[in-house]
Image 1 (cartoon, rainbow, N blue to C red):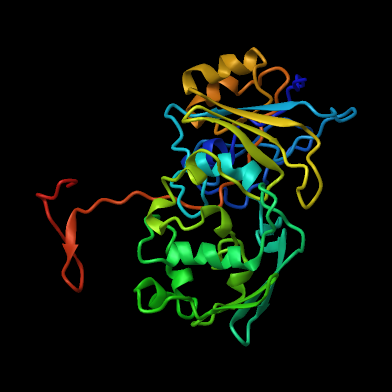
Image 2 (image 1 turned 90 degrees about the horizontal axis):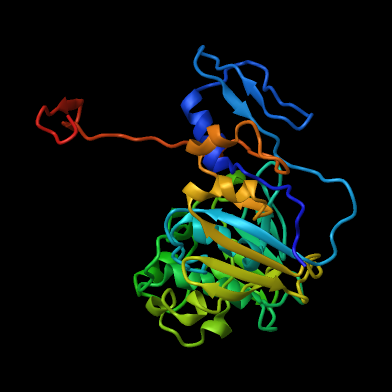
Length: 357
């Protein structure tokens, strides 16, 4: 059966809360305007500019949970999603969202955006500048094989490989002992990755990281890639492989059952999920263009949405019956700059003939 109770999120932090806040500016020392009654409130802008809408971050529903059923999700996007189901290779947020139900998490971020336990735990020895990852035993990939620290080593080897074609190789990974030598083809392995046993991995860093390493995104590459499933694929062929594009696997609560390239993904419950089988049977995610999403919601076609655009806010500001608008502050800043001159070593010299002058 399908879920027909409509209680979902219309506004993602990136789509509404972040963009509207960015337009509004600093809220200064004004009251946050948090409304516990379930409706959105508005915060007066500290510089007298336009107000910033505030949204609830969660929704709670009364009544007994539905047993089984299908959760229908609208992915709001005007372009087809690329369909790169790999943490190492995906390029845009649509694919990241689609991997959410299936990938699984070695570590999770808590309400303070610090790493907390998932399928693994993490210990940071600041004096030794070393991180220890400890996997739970019995965590399984969707094909039944166990997740081991060799899979954690493998994801590092993919991203650090000389033939890697993605964008994830960064300064934090370069700070792992031996990573640069491996990346430059001067070594066959990464010396800073010490496999203690099948469930324990020590990661040695070169430069001191400090407490920032404990923060999600602070430097620890907390992922795994199924070495056994990719087999002997050359690194530069993984991104285009059937293992990534057609039949991806993870160790999350749902596994991919069907992909219509660029348009929809159907998931089914993974009964061997390490935290217990999901309460629902299926998830179906369908791409819906921005021009049709409001009418689709008014018709009750979906339970929740991903990525409601900010420029549609006027069309659902008063609410859509049966739905709740949620949003959280963005965790990043964006800026746009233009090159209108050049730096002469002491100051910027304006160039009236620059393209953006």
